[in-house]
Amino acid sequence: MLTFTLRRLLLAIPTLLLISLVIFLLVDLAPGSPASEIPLTVPPEVRMKILEALGVNEPLHIRYLLWLKQFFWVEPLNGFDAIFGTNYAEGMQRIISYQSRSPVFPLIGERLPQTLTVIGTAYLVGVLIALPIGIYSAYKQYSLFDQFGTMFAMIGFSVPTFFTGTLFIIIFAVWLGWFPTKYDTTLEVTDWDSFLTQLRQMAMPVMVLGLANAAAISRYMRSSMLENMSQDYVRTARAKGMDERTVVLKHVLRNSLIPVVTVIALGIPSIFGGAIITENLFGVNGIGSALIQAIRGNDLPMVQTLAFIFAILIVAFNLIADLLYGMLDPRIRYD
Amino acid sequence: MTDSTSAVAPPESFRGAVWAQFRKHKGAVFGLIVLGLLIVFSVIGPLVWNPEKLTVVEALKSKNLGPSLTHPMGTDQLGRDQMQRMMAAGKVSLAVGFVAMIIAIFLGTLIGVLAGYFKRLDGPLMRLTDMFLALPLIPLLLVMVMLFRDDLSRAMGPEMGAFVLIVFAIGVTSWMHAARIVRGEVLALKEREYVLASRSIGATPRRVILRHILPNVVSPVMVAATLGVAEAIITESVLSFLGLGFPPDFPTWGRLLFEGLEYMQLYPERVIFPGLAISLTVLSVNYIGDGLRDALDPRIRGR
Image (cartoon, rainbow over all chains, first blue to last red; front, side, top):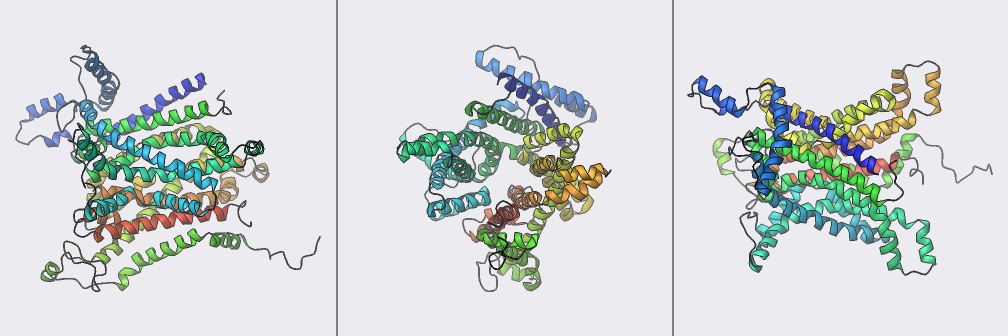
C-alpha cells in the first residue's frame, strides 16, 4: 500500500509538470499581450522598461521556469510568512495579476471561501439526496419509485446546469419570489436573520448543483446495491433470521458504499468546473467567476494560476479516489 | 430434440436482431423520434418557415412580441422572428455536436487501437490519455476560444472561424473515453484465434487492424459516439452561455439562451425554448445511447 501510494505520488509529478507546461504555453501564446495595453504615446525605451518590469520579454523557457518557481516556491513561502509572521519570502517576485496589479494568490484566497461554501454545501446536499434514492430504488427494483428514480437521473444527466439554473430563477425568484436572483457576497452572518438570508440566497445555486450531482451518484449507488443484493452473504444473513433493516442497511449498504465513495471523490473536481457556470449565473463571487473575469480581461497570470489550480485538484482527487478504494476494499491489494 | 416446427424463430440478420432489441427500449424509441423531429425542425424547417424580411419600421413595431400565430415563439429585442432563429441555431448546434463527435471518435479510435495493438506505444499513449483526462477542460476551452477566435475569424470569416475553432477544440479534448474503451477491446481481441490465424499467414498489422479488429470494436464505439454527441452539444452551449462561443449573428441554442438571459424576467419564453431544445436533444441522444448499448450487447439481446 505504501509503495503504491509513493509510486502514484511520484507519477503525479510529471503529469502535473506536463499539464503546467500545456497551460503555460496555451495561455502564453495569447495575442492579447500586456504590451498592447500600454498606450502608444509611451516612448519606446519606457515601454521596454515596463515590459522588463512585467518580466514578459524574457525567453519562453525562462519565463516558464520562473512561473514554476513562483508557483511552487515563492507563493507557499509567502503563505508561510503570512501565517507565522516570518519574512523568508522578502524581495522575491510574486505572481502578479495584470488586472489588479496585486499578487494573484491573496486574490484567489479571498474568492475561495465563497466557492467552497456554495460548492461544498451543494455536493453534500447532492450526496444526501442521491444515497437514499439509490438505496431505495435498488431495494425495490423495477418499482414505480425506481422508474421515477431512473427518469430523474436521466433528466439530471441531460439538462445542463445553466438551464436548470435559469429555470429555477424564473420559477422561484421571478414568479414565486421566494429567493433572491443574485447572491450577495458582502452579506455577513452575524445573527439569526442574516443566517436565514444567507440560507435563502444559497438555496438556488446549491439545489442546481446538488441535483445535477445527485443524478449520477444515485445511479452508481443503485447499481452497486443491486450487485451486492444477490450475493450469497445476503441470503445467509436473511436465513439467520435477521430483519430486513439490518440486512440492507448494515450488510449490503456497507459493501456497496465502497465504489460509491470513490465515485464521490472523483466527482469533486468536475463540480468545480460546474461552479464556473453557476457562479456566473447567480453572481457568486468565487473562483469560477474570477476565471471568467480574468479571461475577459486578458489577465494571463490569473488565468494560468487558476487553470493550474483546477488541474491540481483533478489530479489530487483522482489519487485520493484510488487510495480510498484500496483502503476501503480489503480485496484490493496493490502489490 | 430436433423438432423445429414452431418455437424457433427464423434466423435473423445481425441488424434485424439489433433493431428488434432497440425497439424494445421505450426510452430509446422516444429519443429517436424526438431527435428526428428536432433535426427535421432545424434542417427542413427553414425551407417551410421563411417569414418575409422586415423593413426597419416593421422591425421596430414587432419588437419583443410574445408568442402568437404570426410568430409562434415570439420575436426578440430586434424584432427578429424567434422561431426562425431557433431553426438556424439548431442547425449549428446539431452540426457542432456531430462534427465534434466525429473528430473525437476518430482520434479516440486511432489512439485506442495503436495503444492496444502495439505494446511499445501502450505506455506513452495511455499516459497521454491520463494527462488529457486531468486537464481542466472548461477553463482550457474558454482560454482556447478566447485566444484563437480573432485570428481564425480573420482567416476564415467570423462564422466558419468560430465553427472550426469550437468543433476542433471540443473534439481534441473529448477523445479520451473512446480511446480507453477501444484500447480495452483491442487488448482482448488481439489474443483471439482468428487474429493469430491472420497474423500467422503473414498479414501486416495494418491489414489485421482494418480487417479483423476494427469491425469488432464498432459496437462500443457507436455507444461512445452517441454519448459524445450529447457531451459536445452541452460543451458548446456552455461556451456560448458564458458568451465565449459563436458570434451573435450566427446563433446556436446556447447563444440564444445567453441572449435571452437579459430579458428573462419579462420574456421567459426566450430562455425556455432554447433551453428546452438543448435539454431535449441531449436527453434523446442519451436515451438512444442507452438503447444502443442494450441492443449491441449480445448478452442482453435475444433474451
